Image 1 (spheres, one colour):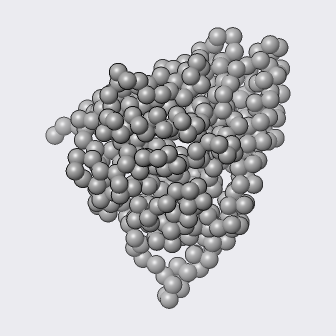
Image 2: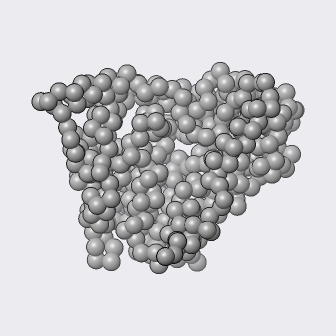
Image 3: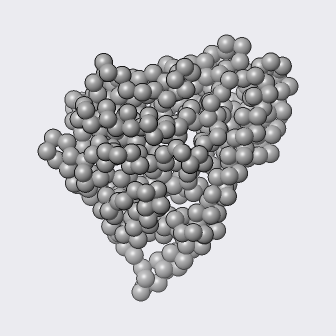
Length: 395
């Protein structure tokens, strides 16, 4: 008997688990209220249009005539069709059998690797959401990195000397909040087509893009259906972090090694996944109604206003940052040339404010720090007052 020794190559602790441990220790040492602007968990409740739909679905489950047992593993057709309708508003045409409902983008971003050979090389931007890296380490793939930095606005572009088979992109980016424009995504699509590669496009934060000139789906780029799989989540879109629902789009046009990836993913899901609860899917369907979208966009506007308060304070203090305008994340340069973890400890010890050290997102994250707009306006205003009292930046 042998274990998967690739797991021994992982860091001892997942980034957010380590943060939680440090925060728990601090909570026992201070009487001052702790303000959490670290982990990107939403704080506003699920909107009424969605909870009403869920309550109706619960009632259906309690009646013999409307009870539902096992559902379609790919997701109920009513939800897949609603998702297709949402994409149609973006100018993207999808068939409902190209949409796969899941328990979240995080799961699918790792599980999608099942349909690819471990011999494939993987290209990952640095800094990046840790799941991309860790799931490929677990599988034993060769990982290549493309550098995101202050000079390129943390939006790395293809490098001719790098040949990769699988490419992870996230826009709006987690952790930096940076968003690719259409010309930049077109360059990535062209690179993928030229190298016969597949782009795994994480659009979990697309609802936060308010600039109408920026793409909210990679399928708004010509040719993307031949080279890209798109992942999205209801977690940040509709507050489903505690409810769990997402979806993955695998176009029929996407063929590699003579095999349609849609067919392979369907086979994987029907074997290893039993679907998302009916009640949750009815709630997700309500997200795409006119009423649901209006209520959700109101919540998103609140989060973006919180992000603006953070951005205005950092501007006032002369601290460099990106993100915030089209994203719930603010990515800032640590003041006074502090390291990421030193700044984390400094904020925690001196201000009782929790953020996320950039070093946890990759080598290029060292010296940077992520704050989220999910902490609530009252908390953020107080946190920014504590920033000012610390004398950070020009102050």
